[in-house]
Image (cartoon, each protein chain N blue to C red):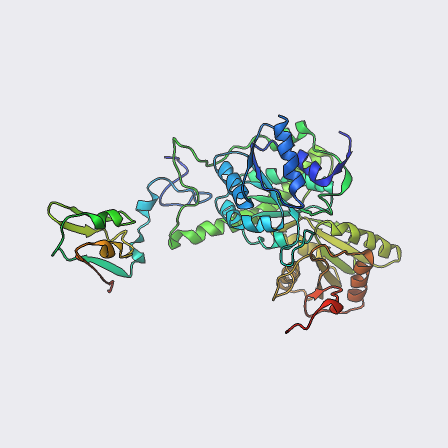
Length: 94
Length: 395
């Protein structure tokens, strides 16, 4: 990696080294979070494939999926696309 | 090298070629077209080793030179009016990415109504984006300022795009005795461009990447900081240019008979030629009048302006633009400089030209006469507005 670049400090022109999308944790943008109900999941992986952040992970054989809260922006595409309506979007509350 | 009688735009094209840009991209628009047309000819003739990229729009032209600069090339584009406005999104990126592109702007009015003639609203509309703005008074200066522009832009203390403004038609299409900067001198003055950071497939990096709020403000501030730092670099490079080429070019401002003047006008661009003539006439009549000509408008040279204006009894700001719904563009900035110094010298702002309106010497005389008599404007004045042309303003 170019020695002038780092993920911690800005460079002239704010040029970013590779890996910046991992360093930028966009989970704080979320107002809704997906809840994987794990009732009717058929392991089709639709949720995993439509996630624009690539932050849904799981095992189709076990029919278990979950999301990475560091990056999920709460867009809800997984819930909309799930053919079994097995994902709910709920308000992110603290 | 001897002076030749050259058209302003042609002279600028040859001056740019001597700076040896490696990539030129431009889209034709009046009154800039002759600059890019001639550059395209120079490249086609094999007299400049550069890639001339024909693009579909000014947005494309700006994007090509941004990309070229990010890849480490010296890059140039030129435009006018609507073209500059179409480039504006890219210009903000260029400044933020700290890419030393040089842009020639043949100043022309913005629509609507449609006009091809000169004023400064195009350049002033992008004044906040972080691009350094220089304004030429004549063809020679327009040529020399292009050489200076590359020098300042590429200086490691600056690394910002620089726009050289030359008045559309008034400079681009006028034939004047002009000396194209000498090739050997230009080569040694500029040297070759070495990018600090550039796009490299073997060492990938992202230009203009997303930045979270905890860092982004500092990223934007660095543009402001570099812009301010360029004030010193512009002065330094202008002095070096004068030493190398034997004639003045650029700098922050020119003081014309203003040192002991009671009434000082402040203006930029080719109109300063007319103002200087009027100043000469009035000086011959014993009147203490002078001109401060802004050569650098962004960054705004506050200290130099204060030093030049602080002895005046009254000041008139002569503008070729304005901010609709507010007033002038330079006028409030001049007032701010004086206010911060605790000075309450009366400042009157006049828009003398939009869309090529002629500004005869007697107009400048009238303004000097009015402010010298103590007439003080509260508001920005559109000078000699033809009331008889106006319809009922609320139909």
